[in-house]
Length: 434
Image 1 (cartoon, rainbow, N blue to C red):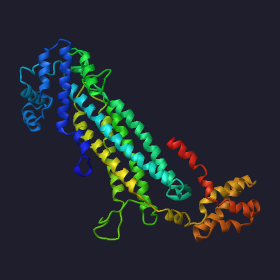
Image 2: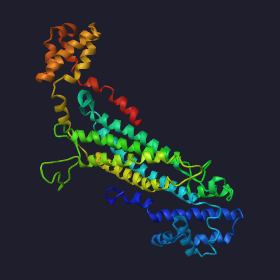
Image 3: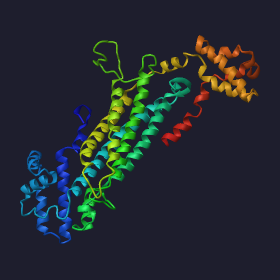
Image 4: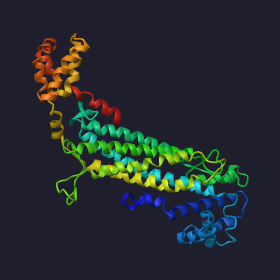
């Protein structure tokens, strides 16, 4: 996580100040529940709330931790400095460090999810706008990087919209999966703390009590969460790769917006490089590299170890901050992207009429020609288009076998582009459902 690829709202979720504030709220709510159960005096629980407006001193906590070698103990010591050691003596009653750390981590992941969902909505809106704008803008579809059959630019954007919409659903499910808390004490048996404390703390923090925890919340939840982030990152790369291809000089069907004063190269003044989408390809790699460590965190020794801890301190902020930045960067690219319909038609016509080969093939079979003979008839004319850049339609009209099977009018009719766009409205209705 570096400032260059970070947005302030998401960075704030992972700041030490935010973390310690959540730790404090967990401890204070736990004290309230303990007092209600009669385990600790009410006045002690009330005293803890004296620190509710305190800005915890990160440097002081670090100073204490340098001695204690334990971050939660350092925080509790600092808390006692604010509320008084006598008043704070029942704080953390029956709890273990993971009750605070794991519950806090999940609160942060939930908050991060909410920010990511805002970014998803912005990207979805941008993709939908461009899809509707270019619903009928013809371009050639490609398979293996080679011209295939006509499609539309709108269908390209609609395809990406549908993919991102699935990702939004996945992220919502991942948010629900991760929104659990555990205040169950050492090894998770509730031996020293009543389950009602966990229920109260979770309710106050917008979480669900973990059905069964050990000394930690099960890490399969986190593995699923980071896996979803990895899928979203891959979808971002999917869009970025398509835009990068469109911006290639010999294609130039679309391009990133190039602002006034922007420079594409330190050496070549003519350059307009797809730097934003190239950057997104790299950022997607960074997010995906957090997935395997999250998977490996699932297997812990017995009721707990801390092999997961150092990993999560890194991948939690890194994955969410990077993905948040990437979502908004891609949304901005799509919103301002330049589209060149004339170049799309020029590209399609580089090999005139060739994209209609399948339609001619099918028509020949329907006219009674065997598929093998029909394929041979079409291919021999298509290859001349590849080699000599002649017009495919004219080649077919000069082929006696094709004319005998389809007739002149039958051949000419096969080159109507509307044939390939007749179901665009149906696809759009499926994708956008409105």
